[in-house]
Image (tube, rainbow, N blue to C red):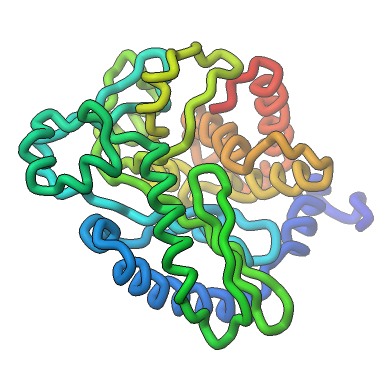
Length: 325
């Protein structure tokens, strides 16, 4: 591309780069059909092999880069939140915020004796002193998935299905008949509404999405790094990472060049092999930019080059200060 041909060469070059990563629509349809067939049949099998899964499972929620239109590579990886609802009333549990770790909370069953009398296996499998323990939930889902796979018959479009652990997710790997694979991250989550204390909530976030947010509790282990304070082992074992996919999508939805800038950061990350920078970190940097300047003119597509450079500077400072999340 000869930049001088364009009235706005920076933007034109970036748009050309983005045009070259357009996803294959036929492959999207094919992989989505396989995904839907797998989820339908595999969830049936999971319910069949485990009574707790049958009791607790509510629905699958679809999140991640593919569903947020932030994917920059082959559509063969899917993030599926497996939503579990405990058989207790809202008044029977509370979400306890952790001051040392603002992104983490604890799930505490206040009247645990009543619930535990009705569901003793639930208490034994998941709880410790009334607290829902993330590691127990991860291990349980891992065992249920592995048990179901022993007798599961994969979709006709696939020749093999296997599993591996990846952080809080149990990843299913489907081998298609053409030799390509589909990765499906099954993440166990607990759905709730979080009423965030103002002491832990940035005013810009509150003005944009409020302070009572639909959230998912994710069993992601806590680790003290960067500026996060160390927490004793017992307390850390009770911590759930709070995730706000819907409020986050609302922040970046349909706002000029926001999503293209995130995609460009991901492309650069992949090209430079910055493996330590997860896609969510890059998205977070841009979300903070939107919260600072939520202005349609500022995010116009013809300013994409300027916003991309701004995002790179923000990312550089965040990495230097170890304060991305």
